[in-house]
Image (cartoon, rainbow, N blue to C red; front, side, top):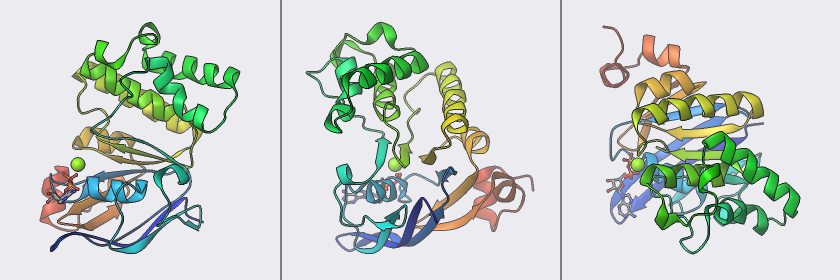
Length: 238
Ligand code: ADP
Ligand code: MG
């Protein structure tokens, strides 16, 4: 059974059809990278999976259960999006453990989870600060920590490393890859970065203008692009 199934999902904003019957099936433990030009509908698709925006038509299944009309909190997902809103009045520590508290995880386990992700993301020295006392890159790591503190069925990452400097981006990419290998979690990850796509993905979905042009392994998409657009986008050899 697929961990995540997107079935004929359509999304319209007024008369604009932004998602045109998108279908993708993602196996448990699979790392799917979603790429495509700006404005093609990647974030709209992620928001639909997360339940942040109702779909116009179609269904979303997590572990075989239809979650199309469930709230984000009732879907077993954790997400890191471009606009990572932290709770401004809470410390970093509270921000990271809040989601666990909501799910009634006992305090010792919450504290252990905070230690684990703080160590992973190198933010231990920031745990008692408030978001306003952090740089953009630090806030992004805290947002990442908040998602990683939980162990949901599916992680959704929408360009989570885009505000980080090059060195940290490479470090974080390595950490995400290790995390995926260690926990075997199911991940859908949007990026602009072809290197990130090629190194992280089990499977790459190339999107254009509201639909999926090609879905395949990095090797397939890179070496056997279905058309000139995919070839150009992936930088395939001609
Ligand atoms: P991407 O993440 O691939 O850059 P988006 O999913 O953010 O693209 O946007 C796809 C299209 O949907 C764009 O044309 C954008 O203007 C439009 N769009 C996104 N969100 C909204 C919204 N809330 N209301 C109206 N149009 C939107
Ligand atoms: Mg986007």
